[in-house]
Structures are given as C-alpha cells and as structure tokens.
Image 1 (tube, rainbow, N blue to C red):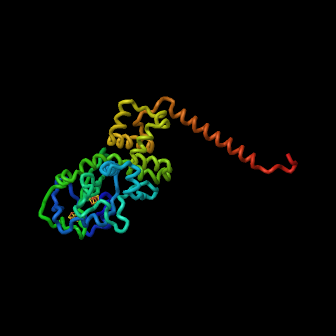
Image 2: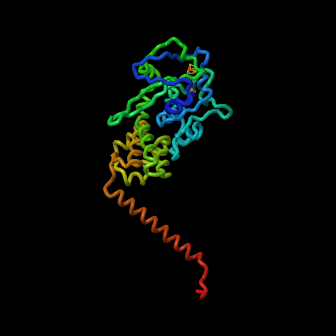
Image 3: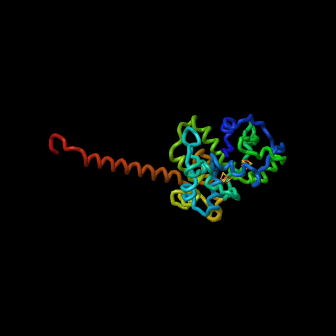
Length: 298
Ligand code: SF4
Ligand code: SF4
C-alpha cells in the first residue's frame, strides 16, 4: 500500500495515467475478506501519518504519544529543508505493516487516513483568487490489487463516507495547509530554524508534550488562555490538537490567533537580553581566569 497524498509519487509509481474524478463520479472497486489478494496491500507499505492518525492510533493501542512514536513510527524529512514527517513503521524483517494479521488489520477502526483512501488518490488545489481548496480524485491501480475487478460501482462521495475519510480529511485539513504554507515559505525566507521544526513536531505528533508545554510558565506568561478553554484542552485531545494547529500558525507565520498578554513579548525579550548578557559575562570571566599572565608577571 502506498502513501495516497503525494500526487507526484502517485504518478511515478502508478502503471496507469490517472484520470481526474470528482465527488459524484463513479468507479468500480470492492475490497472484502474473501478476495484472493486479501492483506496483500499491507505487505509492502509506505504510509505517511497525519496528526489525527497518530492521535487515533495511540489511543487505540493505549499508548502515550512518545511510546507510540518510539514503537510504531519512523521519522523522515518531508521536504528539502527537513520538515519532520512520520512514516508508519514496518516489521523488522519485511516491509509489512506491524498491524496486519491473518484476520486483517488489527487497528481497523482507527487505521490511518492513507489506508482509508486506498484505492483512491486525492489532490487539493486552490484556484487563483479562490478562498478555498478544491479536491480532485484519482484511482490508484496496483498489480496486486484485485478489488478493481470486483463488480461494485460507487461514487467517490459514497466511498469516502463508507471509509470514514471525510472525518479524517476534516481533522487534517488545517495541518495540511500549514505543511503546504511552510514548504512554500522555505526558499523565500531561508532555511526554517530548528526551533520551528521542534515546535512543528511537538504540535503535530506529540500531544502529551504539547499538553505539558501549554501548562508551563514559558507558555502561560505569554499567552492569554482562559480557564474554560484550558479545561477543554486538558480534557479533549481533538481540541488540543486543533489548538496546536492554531498555535503553529501563530508561531510559524505570525498570525494573531491566540491572544498575547500585555507586555508579555517585551518581558520575554528583556529576559532573553538578561540571559545573553549573563552568558557574555560568564564567558568573559572564564576567558580572564584561563588567560596566561602577561610578561610583566602581573
Ligand atoms: S494500518 Fe491496517 S490497513 Fe493500514 S497498512 Fe497496516 S494493516 Fe493495512
Ligand atoms: S482488494 Fe486491494 S485493497 Fe483490498 S485487500 Fe486486496 S489488495 Fe488490499
């Protein structure tokens, strides 16, 4: 099973030229347990995970974020600047998914977005002067997949609903916009900082760390988050994830979404200046202490 989001990837690997389909177009496809190729698509995977995939999977497995990331994912760079992405880990000895069993997918109810899309590919485009993206679809035909020869016709819309793609796309949409914007900003403003990638990783994939971060003094002294919202963020991981996207937009692109406390930025800048001055003084003292005596013997 291949990642379903990268259209160039799809073009390179698909043996057929994709035909653009819209939501009410129909296609022939059926996947079911009795089919001869059952599980074949899970034997050689290359699946990019989204934040909502990570949230659903870690909860399905009863794991903390860092446990899930460590046990079930492999980091990769999503672009030439090193924007951090995650792939679903395969087994040690093969390219098979860790979650495939003889009975099928062991995490089926919470399987990743890419698995739900199969055998469709999707591409989002924004027309010039349009305020929103338009989604277009393509059929992905791989030799091992016999589902394309099954006599079941359905619209793209019906297939998306049946597979639960709508919910995942809605949850991931804002994040995908951030990824696209960050990528397109890269060459014009230079290489993004390591700090921006660390924030991106935490907000995207490590919700437990992000929860601790927004409770910390370094966040609380700068941002104005009311107690009702704070209670919601502590209790609801989906809301926490969405808040993380808003925080990313503010931190990476300077969008004013989360209110900042009066004088907070000035105070933080003053604290930073104090730290830098302290470091300068420490360095000067160390240099003087280690300097050899001058020729006068003083
Ligand atoms: S998560 Fe499930 S559907 Fe997706 S590749 Fe693994 S076993 Fe297959
Ligand atoms: S029909 Fe295609 S998607 Fe379904 S099990 Fe077979 S290879 Fe996988």
